[in-house]
Each structure stands twice: as structure tokens, then as C-alpha cells.
Length: 79
Image (tube, rainbow, N blue to C red; front, side, top):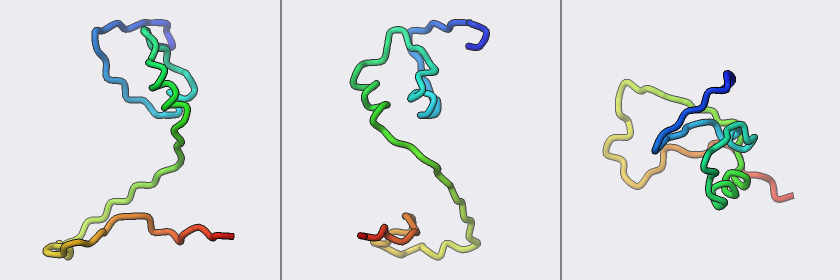
């Protein structure tokens, strides 16, 4: 921590932004396994926008084999 405190436990669940892990701002003892460190280094990340919509009626009820959620931008050009 900023104050220099250390926390010890038999098990821990750590949920921090990927950027914090990539920056190496957290020290783990024992160190993370090499394959996990390599995965953190390889994985990319970017901006994400979440949108929540609420409808008065479930217009999708009874519709089968349809995908309603996905990327709504044009495909990249093949130039």
C-alpha cells in the first residue's frame, strides 16, 4: 500500500484493472507463475463502452436463432 503495509493470507482474490497488472504496480509473493505473467504481457486492452437499454415490452420474446447483441460498426476496409 502507499503506507507500506503488507497483507498476508493463505488465499486471495485480486481484481484490479489489467493496466495495473501490466504496469507491475502490484508485487505478489510468491511471484505469479511465468505463464500467467506472459499472458498479462500479451493480452491487449482498450476502451469499452457499456450501454443498457430498458424496454416496456419484451419484443424479443419467442424469437429463436437471433443474435441481438454485437458490434455495430462497419467492417474495416480491405485497403
